[in-house]
Structure formats: structure tokens, C-alpha cells
Amino acid sequence: MRASVVVFPGSNCDRDAAVALEAITGHAPRMVWHADSEIGETDLIVLPGGFSYGDYLRSGAMAAHSPVVRAVVGKARSGVPLLGICNGFQVLCESHLLPGALVRNHHLHFRNRDQRLRVGTTATRWTSDFQPDEEIVVPLKSGEGAYVADEATLDALEADGRVVARYVGNPNGSLRDIAGISNEAGTVVGLMPHPEHAVESLTGPSTDGLAFFTSIVRALVPA
Amino acid sequence: MKARVTVTLKNGVLDPQGKAIANAIGALGIGGVRDVRQGKFIEVELAETDPASARVALERMCKELLANPVIENYRYELEP
View (cartoon, each protein chain N blue to C red):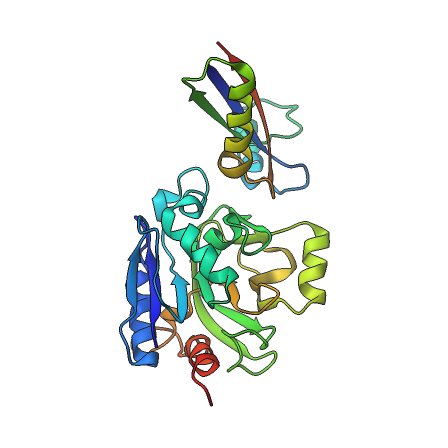
């Protein structure tokens, strides 16, 4: 199983994502630098959390135009599963792989808490190991984490079963309490909280994040 | 040519920073401020001297990078 984790200047959760992926897949992922214009053969891609390009202009805005993201978009369009965590979710919206945008938390505070979520759709490659409506606790650490989109987009996301998780106790003003969404095919998922920080009890509030990674492994390994 | 680009939040997008600024203006003892919306100002110096070509470049720059059309509007002024 070949996983890739993209690293932008300012990414800071890339190694944690790699640790989680290695623990679950048994293989160390390839770390791909933002300036690389090719990704090579890969079974899945993670865009990690952090502050790519210092969040200059807008979080994820400049990363969306980096050579590597052009390659990521190509891979995603050909069906390679893609998980964008926090800043990675911002990059997915800025590069239009997912609709909507992430804006400043409505109370203006950086919100750092072990956040309760309710799982939405389990029909994506990244959430199939969850039970519908399962409640989980995953760390949230963001200043620009409020998901916004126009009413038509929000209605479509809900009608099409593309809301991957909702906040229980909205921490940032996200519309419809949306914490994560997927594309139509269920291959590309953006999630504001950090599942890679809830994979071992020594370092996280729970191991509830594991199922995001076991889901994709199960999706990729023939039964 | 020099372009002065202004990027503002679309109506209907919550602007908590604008609200915080409005509160701070109140703390200065200045009343009568009904609303504050905060935006971005970006100056771009272009080597291009033809306004039509400059506008083409600016439109693309604004739509694809300087503004996020999901949440922001943009306008610009061009001068030689």
C-alpha cells in the first residue's frame, strides 16, 4: 500500500499523519514536497494540517496553486482517494475539489479542544468503518475552521449525503454544524478536526480517529 | 501599470472581525457606527503597459487567487 502525504512549507501535522498511516498500513508513506510537480504511483493522498505558506492571503489559497496540488487535482480526478485535514480541507476548497470555503471562527478565537463529532455519511472511502450517527471525539485546532457555502450548496450536500461529520456543540460557527464533507464519488474528504491526533491513547483524547484510516485501507485492499 | 485591488466579503458572509472593530470604535467613545466590514487591499505593479492586457491578467489573478469567489468580491483600479 503506497500512501503519500503532501508537505507544504508551514505544514506541521504531516509527520503525525505519516505515523498514523504507517501504523495502519504497515508502510511508511512517501512525503511529497510542495514544489514537486509529480506524485507518482500512489493509492491514497493526505493533505495535512498546519499553516501552509503562513496562511498568507487566505488559508490554503497559495497551496492550492502549488505544483504539487496541480498533480493532486489530477490524481483526485482519476479517482485516487484524498483526505484533507484542517489546512488540507482549506486547500481542497480553495482548489475547488470540494465546494464552499473555510473562514475565520465566528468568535475570532483559535479553537483548540477535544471536539465531539457525529459521523454523517459512512458511504465514503474514509468513513466506511464507522457506524451511522456514531459519536466520536477528535481534536480540533483551528482559527479559520468555520465551513460556509451558499444555501443551494448546503442543501445539495445534505440531500446527497455528502456531510461526513457534524459538530456536537458547534465550536466555530460552521454552517449546518458541518465539520467535514465529501465529493460526489466519496473519494475526496475534507475534515476540519484531526483524526491523526486520535489514534493512540497515549497522545490523544481517544482512538476514534483510527477508523478514518482503517476505512481507506479496507477500501483499497481487496476483501 | 499599477493596479489597486480591493477584496471584500460578500454580503451575507459573517464578518466577525468587522464586528470586533465596530466594538472597538465604540470603546473609543465614537457613536453612530452602524456597521463595519473589513476587506483587503492589494497593490500589484505590472510591467504591462496596455490596459486591456493588464485587465485580462488582473481578472485572472483576482478570480483565481487574490479573491475567493465563494466568499469574496473584488474590484480594482488601474493606472499607468
